[in-house]
Each structure stands twice: as C-alpha cells, then as structure tokens.
Amino acid sequence: MKSNSIRCALGVDPGGTKCEAILVRDDGTVLGWGKAQEPGLSGRSDEMVSLAVRRALGAAEFDELQITSLRPLPPLEQLTIKPAVKVRDHRVTETEGALALVGEEYGMVVVAGTGARVWGRTRDGRALGLDGLGPILGDVGGAYQIGYTALRAAVRAVQHPRHQT
Image: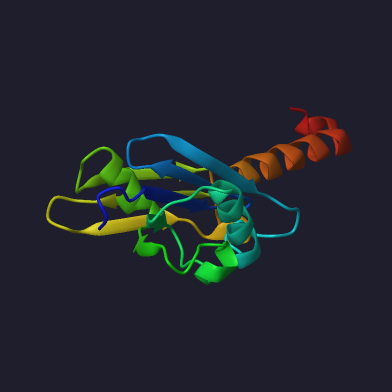
C-alpha cells in the first residue's frame, strides 16, 4: 500500500424497490451517495445496483476500495471502477450487518421496509428466520402488505356498510 493512497469504502444496499450506495473515505468523509429506483425494476437488479453505485462513485479518485454489499455486484467495469484500483468485496446478509453495527454475535433483527423479515440467532448458534417471502406469500409488517391490507379494507368498506372502517 502506498503511504499516500486514498482508501474508500462503498456500501451497497439493494432492496426490493430501490438500491442505495454510499462512498466514504477512510477518514469518514462522505464522498458520494447514489440512489436508483424505477417502477417495475427490483433494487436488486444489476441495472439498479450499477446505477446507484455509479452515482455514488461520481468522479471520486481512490486507490483502494472496500465494498460491502448484500448481493454479488455486477462486473467492476460496469460500475466504472478503474482496473488499477485495489478492490476487496465483502458480502454480508442483512442480519449479519445489523448485528455487526451493534457489536453483537447473537440477537434478533427485524427488517421492515417494502418487505419484512425477522431473524434471530441464539448464543449457542441456533438461528431462525421468519417471513421474507415476498409480497405474494408474506411480508407481513412490510410497507407493501400494510398498504395492500389498507386498500382491501377501504374497498370492502365501500362495498358494504358492515365492513366500514
């Protein structure tokens, strides 16, 4: 490593409806942020991930890049990362990332965004995940399910006075 090298970290958060990415220099300075969201496209798609990452990277110059993501990334050249940059890719799960943020190895993690998932790990290593099944089979507590349930209740209330909300 050069003594004057610029080291950065890129965090990528691909979700069900959008993808966000942030570029941070090793001293904590935020260099860029990108968001990609298009109707009908998953935030986990290569297209949305690439767009969010390119927006976060912008015109920043760096020699080393640590990437943390919840999914495999598209090829680096698609992300406009120069071949001379030393890249290390760290793949984590939502639950590993959340536990690491609070410095724990076990506990319970609840993710409630567009979708929903509950996951836990005990001290002795047993793990259990609930839901995370997507909008058709599950996501109870996620934004889609809450909106869907409210819409159904409103329509039923209009159809018959017995179902007024």
